Image 1 (cartoon, helix red, strand yellow):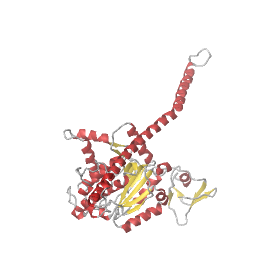
Image 2 (spheres, helix red, strand yellow):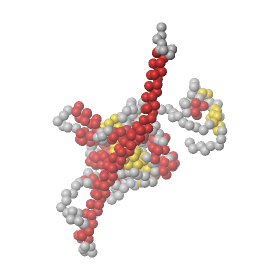
Image 3 (cartoon, one colour):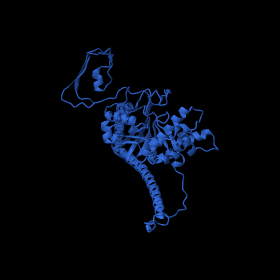
Image 4 (cartoon, helix red, strand yellow):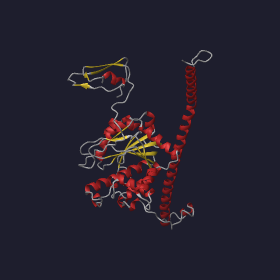
Length: 442
């Protein structure tokens, strides 16, 4: 027996109707307030972005002040010896004239061979449109590989995983870490032929170091029980990373270290930037945001923090591999010697934040170190997406190739799946009949 109210409508039905009205009202209220929440998040991100850019400007001010002080010192030295400049010193205040100031050690103390050539720290090759003041910088070092080179495939993947807004806020710096200028030019031409728009827009830059940037590696001492070949390989890698970071750190807000044999996920730029700004909004004092669990791939830093890494790498470049040095730097900053390793691990986790799932996967098998096979994969990356949906112009698609199961050419063209054909024969075609004239880009 069903209870009824005076108007004859079952009580249960009236209750459901009232509940639906309440839920609908709640949803409507949330929809109405949603734009305000969105605006608040956008505003918070803008504030966080300005915070980091302010730190960047302060860092640039320090660098500029250092250059001014150095120039002033040289001018004063000239004025002391030049009889033709008797009134030169009155241009400087008393602080500047202080000749008893302590002289701090420079990079030349750790790498004295830089003194042999004034162009040691200048790129030997530079192809750039001068893009700067952007948020995201991707650093990709690459070297000559004996078996297989993955650079062009990596660049293609990175570019295709960005939308136009992400691309306009990103700079990809490719460091061809070789001193053979003919080889450098050859790789640059390959990049230019496949990515002309990206080079012309300034999205991609290409640099290479001067031969005098590198020390005499035959004099590098062997450490950690490694062969001399391996010591030279990892020592050069440390110097390559330092050179790339030194070139990049004044050009943007965030720097992401990548490798030339990786695969990225769609819209990785937006994901990384949003995550970084979120952590800044939460006032978390991070040093590394880690978007890949392997080696030195996918590590994001604030550009203002890169000098810590650069100096550390240059001081200990021949002692340990780059990922070990990174770990030691964090340990030096945060770990206490009078506490156990567990406390150190907890403390490091506050500076070194891991994002999951990973945004990058290592795809290379043949290492740049001759004879070394590198089969490590990031399990946090997940399965590789076999296709991305797309919006093609209307067309009729045809093919004589036999279809496997449901993986038809029509579904692939509509962006619903991929095409899987069996035993294509000579003379088979894949035909696209467009309903109107179109311009085919790719």
